[in-house]
Image (tube, rainbow, N blue to C red; front, side, top):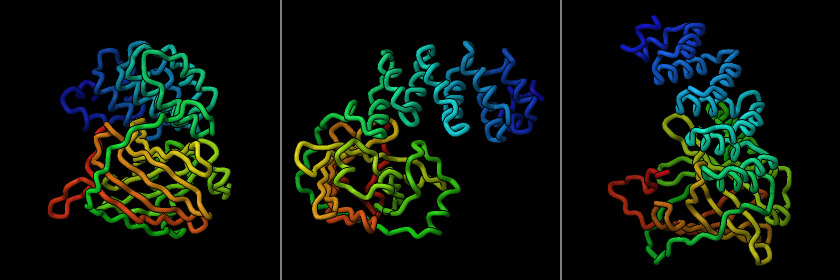
Length: 327
């Protein structure tokens, strides 16, 4: 059956046993695309020795870059982040820039403070976003997002609706089935936000849940929220909301960033009389339309209230105002 893969790859791989799939992966004459499909099939079948096989592929010199990148994605969350240190040690040894960039991204999502030193030594791929993710996650006042220019909002009064509702426990539990959480320090969502038919779930950081004193929270870099958009049937991580202190008392900078490290929105927040007031605008160069969103967040009720939501994006016949992002 292995010899027939060249003619009907997808169907043939699906019908292979685990041992046949592993043989395919070690076959030097097999195509890279077939090996990638074989690995994905083993991952789908949750093969017990896949971590061991993955490490062999990672440290091998002849594996295709796409297969190696797939291996990195598999190892990142495996066994409760057991292999993050392995990926960190391997980073400097990896020659392929695509694979190297993928490891850098994983370290940003799951690495710890010691990985900042590892990332500092890397020169041939961009590590700035990864170092920022670690800094905000651990409250380190270094490698923070710089002040960014925002698109000048010229008062275009095209209002769009932002509808929120608080989720009960049953609704939260229902969301656990498909949830894939790259940064495993956030709770299930408390709030569901609907923005022109796009459903977004807002997750609160566990550290925020355990510490209700926002006067202290805003004094250090944090990732208090992350947003999931429903992509087809599966919720997908879409944005991180990151904050760090501003010069003025009780104010803080807001950066809304994609997992790829692209800054999309930037703004300012202020703690006043127990509420968080915020205003957010589109970042210059983000490829998103100019917006202006203002509102407040009530920590006790975990509720968002949007007082202004304006966009410069035209809509026709009820189409979504939020375009497909380009990352």
